[in-house]
Image (cartoon, rainbow, N blue to C red; front, side, top):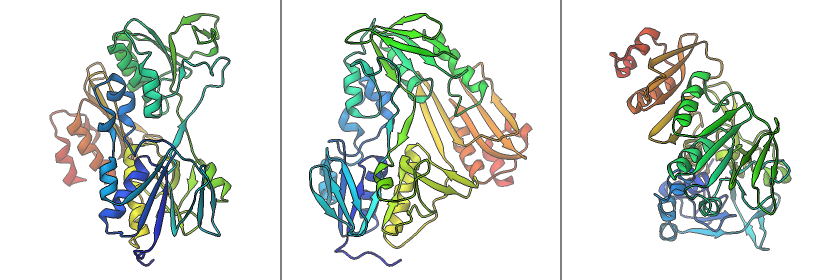
Length: 412
């Protein structure tokens, strides 16, 4: 793979974290050709995690979210086309057709199309006070309703739902969280950690209900009540749908690229078309560490995969093989997670689930495969290293708070 010439054009579809990182990394690594960044939002690339936290609460400005401010993009000679959709890829001609009629020629194309919020398929879900939370515009629309004394019903007990519940509670709202599964965070952690966060939210005044089914949203023109499957009703000034996201794969699919829970890429983040790459929430990549294919929805994944794509485009391919990590801020608590705990055969706890600081370590055949920490940044930092090393660790030492995790690194 030779280094691209200065006359080449790299077009990036998707102006989120992965797209922005790919563009800036290309310049950092010395690419001097043309870079065009296409986004369906009018905003320049920005960070999404603060949307449900600091930006919703009003403690962060829109400008503070920007990854690539307009002046920075201009200086880096990154052309930004915002508020326009990529409609079609002509692979034979190496052209990208945009919704405004423009056609962009490319030498290499990067699909960083991200994901979109899942929508509720319930009667009344199309009412004007039922909101998703995926973009700056979503939060701006939601903010007008986040007033003291108002009632918010949040559908979904995942990260987004619980983070918004924490912010809304702090703003003096009456908050109800409805989760269809038997516990919150069920897809990402163990029952003990779920129970901890359920307790924290209830102690803060949240009406948190698990194992519930929603029958309909009632009211015209806006929703006034949520009707549950058991016939009970909950008053609501607005509804937030925090039920996950879907990868944006339609553009790739229409171009005949392989799609299977995301755009299928190889270990270098390249699709079956050698001129097209994919990165971020939309990409399904092989992961040697876990021995399977993964599609990850995280900032860390978007940034690191964006860098790998940039390196590959510049003729310096690197295998993308990372240990995923995630975090969530709720009230004054920070949950930090590393690795995927599915399939663990032993859990070791450092600290106490009844306190506001603990670490849960997940072992499989003696090896540390994942960890969840609350209020223990140092433990998280060393857990990341131990998981990446596939360390075999003594469970008793893991549990002993008198033993620094740092001391377990050399033995690993």
